[in-house]
Length: 122
Image 1 (cartoon, rainbow, N blue to C red):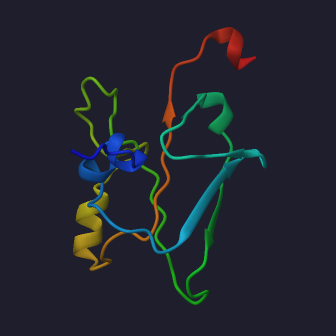
Image 2 (tube, helix red, strand yellow; image 1 turned 90 degrees about the horizontal axis):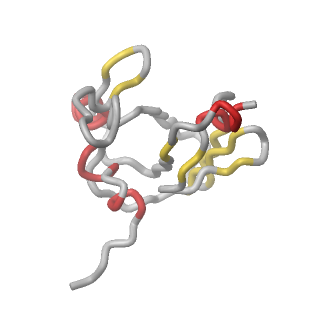
């Protein structure tokens, strides 16, 4: 049996938040001008407090994209009873895409944040 290595599948983004798709554009997310986000990596909350820079590479420049930033396992991975939580509203990416006939995603990036000690935040 083949081992699944796609971080979006291993991290349960595909399945819990979105359906499986084949990326057709490249998307990069960078914080603080130099901290690029790679799928599945863990970042400290203090390193992602600023507004991210999101770049979509390739594709038709006349195309519009919908950017969704959601927390799929609120309040935590062991008991995510507030699934797909945007901190100011509840949201389902899959339902939104279906209702607006958006089709499958064209790209995705995700990361995990862990609690950090008070000394680390300074």
